[in-house]
Length: 375
Image (cartoon, rainbow, N blue to C red):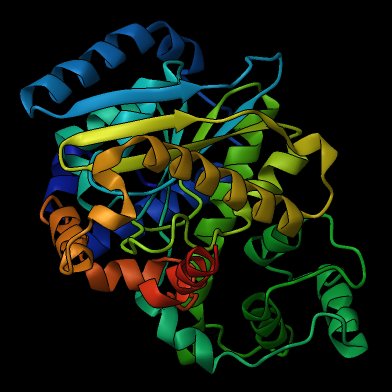
């Protein structure tokens, strides 16, 4: 494997943002294929009290309030995946402070934080970065809908795995592939082109693969951390939840998959943002070792996160549904987006969250209103 040419801090400062993003994707790919060990875990734990202190100072300076509603977790001798609801600008800092122990934060699309103080601080705390590829989501529709269960596809993959010219990056996607295992259509398309000596960058396939590889690597890196007994903080909704009607938007399954494979405890966290107040409710452990189906675990996790948020809303009179004004939904979104940074706008949120239709207030609360009238 050719040696990766690392850039100096000054060189990185001079790069355009997209060039810098591509540089870090290539660095992560190099480190993954080289199987570099995790570095700095012990000193990050030793520095945890210091970095928590910095979080508290920052919170006091911006006059942000942190309230821990409840903490039902049990600290057991196994790795923990803290799965947190995504509600606004300071939910990461609020979760870290409420959790207390050192965690590795899974950060999508780090962008400008590669070279600012926020990124430096997150590196001190520990973070696992990835580019989600939301920018090319429209191009995914142009990829052929390969069926991974088709016998021709199974033979194609098996033949490619055993050929002399197989690309190590494509092989990395396959891992311990067994005939009939799920393989993403983008990967199958790339294997098909490579097997037939076609250009992989046809129809932007190379760029799609680049993002796909980065997401794959992040999952493998998270799993590696769990297997070494390290803890993860992740936001499985993928983007800020801008709906006041849906307590928890549909979750990506990656959290469940790595927790099952890493035999970790998932600790669900519900957060409610009320102006400058961040109210954190830490739930009971969900033992991922008791699951085999990631979709079932994802569903149970979503229910747990929603329940934790609902518990807060039941106790907080200012959040009661009957006290909301007619403009509450618009005000809610405007208030959240007023704190956004690093180009994180509504368009990015809609592209990077799980694609799922958002129900209206009437769809969510209509049946409840009908039941209350009957009662």
